[in-house]
Structure formats: C-alpha cells, structure tokens
Length: 121
Image (cartoon, rainbow, N blue to C red; front, side, top):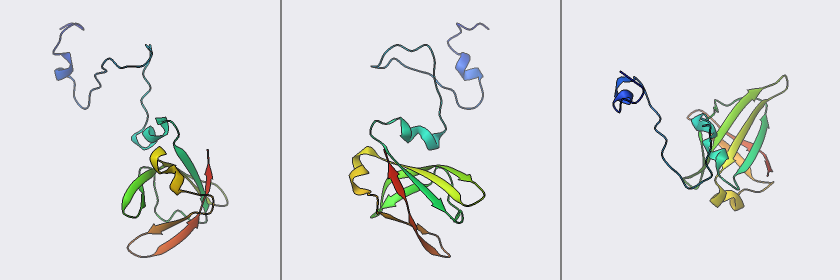
C-alpha cells in the first residue's frame, strides 16, 4: 500500500474528507469547524447573544425558527456565575427580520419562555 493508492480512502473507517477544486484563492490548509459553527462562515450572518437565568435545555446546533421556517441556529452555550449565555447565528437572507427588540421564545413540551436578545453585527 502507498499514499498514491487511489483506493486508500476506502481502507479508512469513518467519514473521510476529499477536498475538490474551488473558485477561491489557493490555500495550503483546511479548517474544519463543528457543524454548529458552519453558518458563521457565511458573509453578512447576524449573531444574536442571549443572557438568561437558566439554560432551558437549549444547546449548540438547535434551530432558530420563525413562522415555521429555520432562519438560523444556536452556535454556542456557556455558563457563568450569573447566567446561561447563548450565541445564535441568523442566516443573512433573514437578518432583516431580527431587531434589537425582537423576542425569542423557547418552546418545549413542558413550558414556553420568552427571551430577549441583543443583536450584534
């Protein structure tokens, strides 16, 4: 077996990454992000930061939905001594629908909570 063997990827277990030629500038490295952060790579994405007293079972990767359509997703969740902190990314095409006074609702099978957020560029 050699590294030039064209069947090498079939010998590997798990997911494999086979990069193809793109339209951008030539790079000598690849950055792989967690799936929950891939939306941040789009130009003009809107990030929204929440600081709430409890986590409400929100986690990175969960969808942000408006009128039944996915408009973004939760990017991260952190905890400090005062609150749970979340960052959500909103798709560029829907950023005009989110404003500084927008309310976000956490809807679970047990309860519904209304959260306020700070939208930032």
